Amino acid sequence: MRRGPSYPFRMRPAETTPAPEEASPIRVLYVEDDQKLAQLTRRYLESHGLIITWVPDGEAALAAATRETFDVALLDIMLPRMDGISLCRALRTRTDLPIIMLTARDEEADKVLGLESGADDYLAKPYSTRELLARIRAQVRRSRGGAGPAVGRPIRVGSLVLEPAAMAGFLDGKRLSLTAYEFVLLRALAERAGRVLSREQLLDLAKGSAEEAFDRSIDVHISRLRQKLEADPRHPRLLRTVRGAGYMLAIEEPRA
Image (cartoon, rainbow, N blue to C red; front, side, top):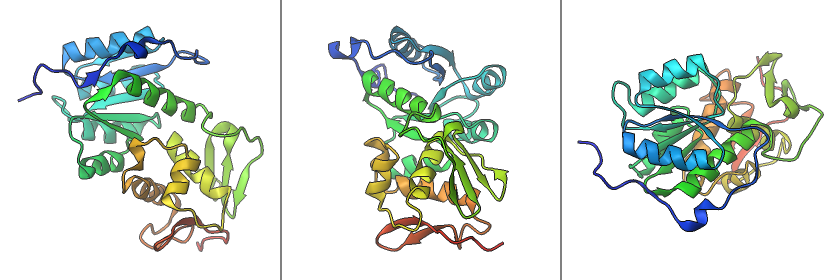
């Protein structure tokens, strides 16, 4: 059975305060099969200037993502025809747009599964619509290059080159497929190459949200980065773990 008639967010008078204008409207792909919930959430987000494309299932979401360009995707996990986890994986093979998972399940294992599937953030129900709006804007700021100080020149660490202005990364001359959060996290490590950074420091440097700060979130993001950086992710040479301390981007060149 689906969820009952109570809706998984809290609307407060303070939430109607207009937020600062965005450089350009945020386009959101919103996937939710509960029509009444979708209408309420859509109305709130549109009142703050966002452009919402709502679809009721995963197959319709994939079709929409093929036709249109979005800034962020909101995915409910419990969907007909294709669950949110499968949809997240499918979208991640097609696009690097930020993905926020929305679910009534708040167990750490479920959060890890969502992040391992390619999500950038995870919001458990019940949540406030104000927080949802803040999460969306934070992800879009990252993807548009607003997650940290503007830096024009490339960052080089051995064969790794990051171009902050373009939010692009290259390894051995080949472009890496990085999400906005992965790029910001990798930039934080590259700017401090050779130094060990704790999980707490990485969350702060990458402007992580409180929701992202659950015990294993940074570990999952690091694991995803290793899949893209390392020839053998199980024996990393570039992005290293320092047991009991944190993570470090090695200065020396990785072996071929």
